[in-house]
Length: 487
Image (cartoon, rainbow, N blue to C red; front, side, top):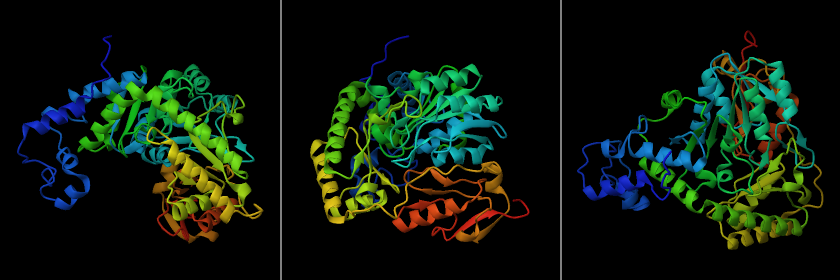
């Protein structure tokens, strides 16, 4: 196989050639290189709007690439060690859903942890697959779900030998990694595919001191969020496949839901970001790891906070830890994570990734610099001094609540339903999603039994200011539940 030139960026280069041609546009988009929308041009700049163009022969077509997009996909596959790479412009949600839809059909089982992103559950609503949950262990101090134990995955496989696939988070939002290689081998030994949600693991492919990537572990498919730690534009992503997957079949699945009007801004950003990571990723992520380690030490020296890291590793449910994730438990300063999240933004002009009931996450990547780290650390110290409380009494830990699955997500989502006040739904079967976003891990999914603990959790999260999404009622005063005749 010929060695590919990772200094090349074929989509970007084709766009530059196209700009120099001064083509008169009698096609879409209707702003005609920005001339029809001067306010948009002032906001984004002439270079940006001039590159917001339609698919055409010189620029290829994402639905059926034969030239520059195909070349960019080959370079991405080479950079990530995959058999094939698909450029995705619908975010990693689209990549995850295409991955799941490529692996399972209606009525087929998929083994997965319950702490998956909403996109996984959305895929099951779309295709009718049936979830088999591997309930994760929880860390009592942090109140977060951990990875999947290999023994628990094996038990689920033995109890469900007809399952078609196993899905693994690599890593979780908090940086927790399961033993992916062992799970891949286990799945393959039982004739199942292994899929990885690597929305937060793009950087794993570019430094040997980071956890093992899905392609290195032998996974069949991986959804990779290039726009998170990889540096491309928001909403751009990659879907990677191994040698056992038919690229033609996967492309057909992608084309069921992905736009036919792909943004060349997103495509070129993927192309340029891949080139940057291939050429400089190891150096850049080495620097990110150093910054994260420094920040953890400084935050832990403040007192009260707990910025956790590799000390959590136990060889099983925490097989490895992504040290670029600056995850911090806040309960011992007497504040919920979401409260610290809000204070950092409102009082100190610092926007971190998310805050939940007990933790915050500051997302570090290639665009961060030491002076921003210093500002974050000093602001956290000020938050503790100004707003911290002597007791964590009354604070609820974010604990994993084991679901009772009554019917499949698809059946519940489309079944006859009724809307009830939140407190009156205990014992009923939910027909919609409820989640804090971010991280976007559902508290309830369609088909699960609503319990008093779940209601208490939702009410507490609302009280503390968590951004709750999913239900038809935006205020979440009511929930849709299955009609009793269906329940």
